[in-house]
Length: 75
Figure: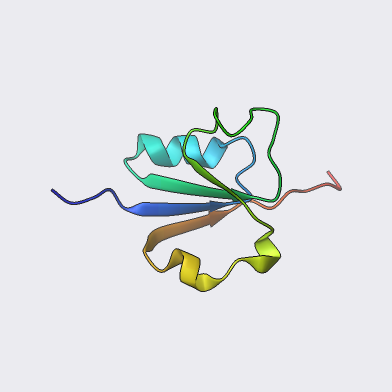
């Protein structure tokens, strides 16, 4: 049996992209700079608290898909 493809969700926030990716059969690792109101126990996948400016490409070597939804504070 093959493992589900890995998706990386940058700026994962509350997990909107993650929920959709999980529904499509991906394993997901979400990255965000801070823990949001849900707390990490309620985030729907693995959560890594890390500043995107410190992320290295080697962390994604097995990823089939990377999504990024940076915040839009001005809006």
